[in-house]
View 1 (tube, rainbow, N blue to C red):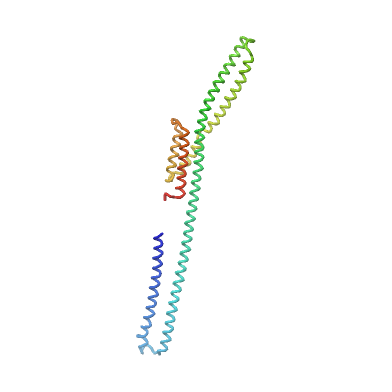
View 2: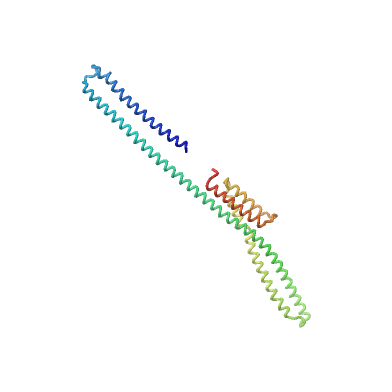
Amino acid sequence: MYKKKNEVKIKKNNSWRTMIIVIGIYIILSIIIPIIFKYCIFENPELSNLTNSEWAGFLGSYAGGILGGLGTLIAMWYTVKTSLNIQKENNDAMNIQLQSDIQRRDKESREKFANEIANHLGVYITDISKYYYANIELEKLEERKEHVAERLSEQEEEEHTFDIHFEILQSYVPMTSKNRVIPEKNRTERAYVDILHEERRIKEMAIRVKANEEYFIMQTLLKNIPTADNLCAELNEMQNRVRDENVELTEKWVEKEKDLLMWNYSEFRKTYIDKSEE
C-alpha cells in the first residue's frame, strides 16, 4: 500500500514537471521569436518595408496569439489530466469492486464446501456411534437370548417329561402341572422370537455401510487440501481403529474421537474459509 502511494505521487510529480517544461519552452520561444524579428527584419530596411506602427500591430496580434495559445494549451492539459484522473479513479473503483466480488464469491464457495464436509462428517459420526452402541446392545441381547434359550429348553424338557409320565401313569399325573408349563413355554417362545427380531434390527445398524461411504467421500473431497491434513489424519485413525476386529472399543475412546473430529473440522473450516494458509 505504501509503495502504491509512492508510485502515484511520483507519476503526479512527473506530470507537473512535464507541463512546466512545455510551458517553459513555449515562453522561451515566444520571447526569442520577436527578438529575431526585431534584429533580423525590423531593423533591416532591405527585408522590411513596414512602418513601426504596422510592426507594432503585428507584434500585438502575435502576443495575443501567444497568450491565447498558452491559455488553450494549459486548459487542454488540465482537461486531459482531469479526465485521465477521473477515468483512473473509476477504473480503480471498478477493480476494487471486482476484486471484492471475486473474494466474496470465493468465500461463499468455500463456505458451501465446508458445509458439505460438515454434512458428510455428521453422517459419519452418527453411523459410527450407531455401530458402537449397536454392538453393545448386541452383547447384552446375546446374554438375554442365551438365558431365554436355556429357559425354553428347560420348559420343553419339562413338558416332555410330563408327556412320558402321563402315558405311563395316566391318572397319577396331575394335568394342572402340565397346563401350567405350556403357557409359560408359549410366553418364553414369544420372548425368544422378539429377541431374534430385535437382534436382526440392531445388526442392520451395526454394519457401518453408511460410515464407510461417507469416509471415502470425505477423503476424496479433502485430498490435496493442506488445511485438511489433520482432519484426514483423525478420520483415518478412527476408521482404522473401528474396523480392526482385534481392538476392543470403549465408550470413552469413541466419545474422545468424536470430539477430536469435530475440533479438527472446526479448525479446518476456519482456516479454509479465511484462506489463512495463503
